[in-house]
Image (cartoon, rainbow, N blue to C red; front, side, top):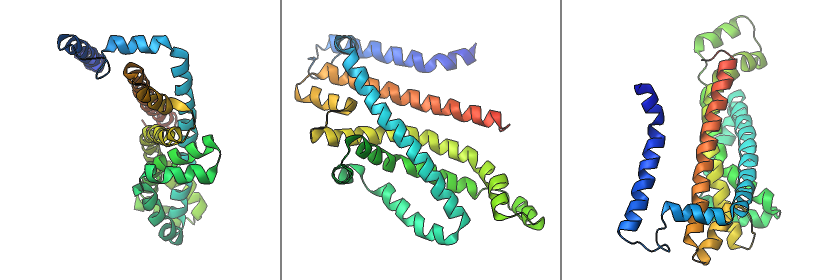
Length: 254
């Protein structure tokens, strides 16, 4: 019984928060242009669901393209670092530099340099998302038990066989954890890049709809777009978590 209650707790808390939000807006007579109530936000969404959902699809296309690129590049760089100390010395500082550089500062340059709007948004989001995959995979590759590494060397195992049979399986849970973190960051990177692109006149994604609604003081529509982004972020996190559990279960990891 308690287990079911714990599972329902997030939904119950969300419903309670919405009820309190609607009640506070009505009780204090807060203007719609400051804080709209949940019912007004839902009405704003229902006035143009197609436009908002198409904008969400555009943002998600950028997000998933960036996530795939981040996963491939991050894992490849981590494997290269694991295989060569020279590669580690060359790659790690630049990876850290990309991680600490504010994407909002370099997004205008990337948009100008790349030229294509979609590709430039993907590059921006990928830069934000790749580091968790890279760092977690590198940690996982280094986490193989030393005694097993010694056993592979004792029996004459090549570097390739040690990598594929020992280090990569050990790194898989770490990679999946990094992928789940990067999913949310890819969405954040896509939204930030779309804000910059929207300010420059590129009309795409939910971020542009938020800018447009803000300029027109359509605050309920802005909140509706923000709610869609939140729901998308929760769905991405939950979906990647389920994907990770299925992969680990398939290989006998859980």
